Amino acid sequence: MNHYTGQPGSYIQIRTVADFEVKEVTVTNQNTDGTQVESGSVTLREGSMWWRYTATVVNDLLEGDKT
Image (cartoon, rainbow, N blue to C red):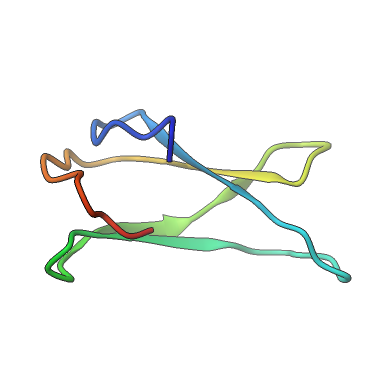
């Protein structure tokens, strides 16, 4: 999550590696207490195995978040 700052516009990158074509990825970001910060579909960066989810809400509680 090195590009994710908890601010809208920051992003979470996910790399997929599989023996089959990955057609869709969904991300859910949760705080340490299990409350959901946000969730949504991830966009594939053309010509790569990297997917990107761009944050849309403020998350002030970053420490211990799960994605």
